[in-house]
Image (tube, rainbow, N blue to C red; front, side, top):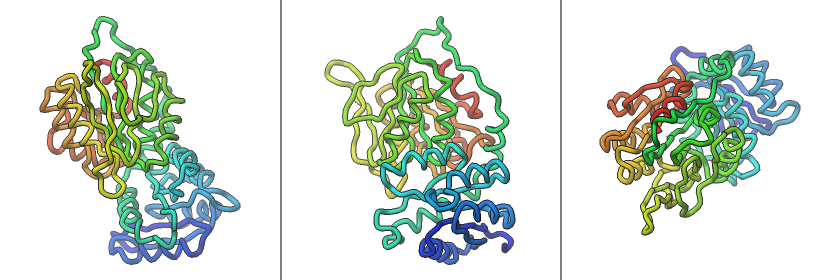
Length: 349
């Protein structure tokens, strides 16, 4: 592979898809095709022989599927992997499983793929480059060695002050949130909002999987609902969430069509700005791993309102884009490793 270029291994059982992805890669001056494989067996072999910087891999393949190949690669020769997934509800569960197994991100195939390949060209290039700059190997090795963490405990002499916690995340977020939420106690005296960049068809399955791991209740947000202590709402893709006070005085969450361009929805800044306006100094903003800068401005608004702001540190971030943007602008009151965030949130509420 040429020096300075990102070598990409393409894994897909369709010759047409392999060629389309190869053409995209060859047209970008920063990328280079390292090789192509037809199934998981070939993927494992070529990943070890070629040592590509990034692997793009379909989930459904003959002989060995993408999940099995991903699990083997991450155990034997961990490297950044971006999955290809059909943008349908049935594709949500294996895609989320892939993210838990170590994939950096996924590319959602459009319904008419590959005839509408132009729709995802920009997304493919951006995610390959973000994956290449990620800390996939370091984060995976840290997770593999990590000992079981104890659940964060509430300080009973620290009364709840009607606080709200907003988590914002993108690439690497499902795995990070899956580490944080099992540590939150079921009697957490604050409502929680989760703003995770994710296509709408995947949001429900994501909420279900996170709920199964958590002691607090986690559900998919609906059009309008009251905020409840000890209950987390996942903002569905294709929507943004704003927070309001009802005529009765209760705090409610309302969904609006997203203002995001392309795939970066729901928008973290929208919810954090709303939290800052409604909850002021009682708002807590947590910005986790992800590419881009969404959430930095929202975190700043919470800080300006007197609330608490936390950014995940570089060493434990799979993609240090969003936290970096907030840290560089000095918008985070605290910079914490992933393993310390749950404990700190519990202390603050």
